[in-house]
Length: 284
Picture 1 (cartoon, rainbow, N blue to C red):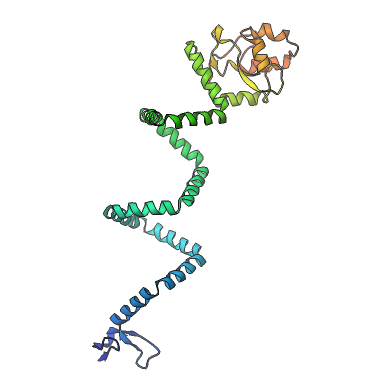
Picture 2: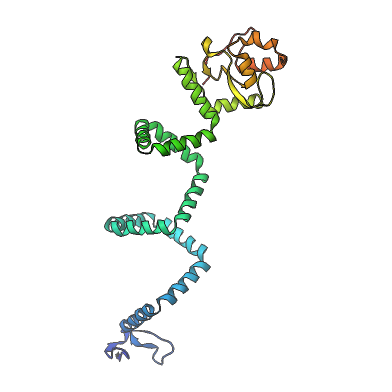
């Protein structure tokens, strides 16, 4: 059996027509081909309307759509990744242009995402950077030197900002460089200095006052004192200047602020015995 299409007028078999329960024969008056063309024309003439409807639907069902998308991607990960790679390879120019426009339009969103990701994964990312720098030391140092040569002003500005934010680290770096110039063993890091200050409750190890702390060499550099955890104690500027290169065991008992308890605490921290003999040479 056949039926004429009301649009194109062709006499076509019944299976060329879609179902329509509102008509007596239960079939549409338009063939499937004409129906499809009518839908395409309607969409073309009402694009804005469809876009608005689609936008409202996506906003109302955001979580539902995201969940469905994630589930589909997890089930078809390999296929999606392969298709994405093939598309990117065949449309390099279009992909590059799209990425560029997307970054411009969503710069704030992308920046916030990266900042949040770095905060949430700080420990893992820092460990990854440490491993990479350790395994590619020559390459990393070469890049740093190249950057410094190309951007001396930026390097200088960064150095100033870093010095203001990390005065303790800069002080440690300076002292370490000075001790190495004297051919004295130097291994002291910021974490050890922080540990020393906590041990002495952020107070001067000698007078016990809560003042700005400096690093005092228990055994002076001029007397072959090392720059290590076993020879550095937190001291206020006054005590540091007063002690100078003097012998601790001769200088400290003569001070007005002398305390047997603090003396024992200092000696214990530096691994000295009651006889004034240091048990450990270096602790790293």
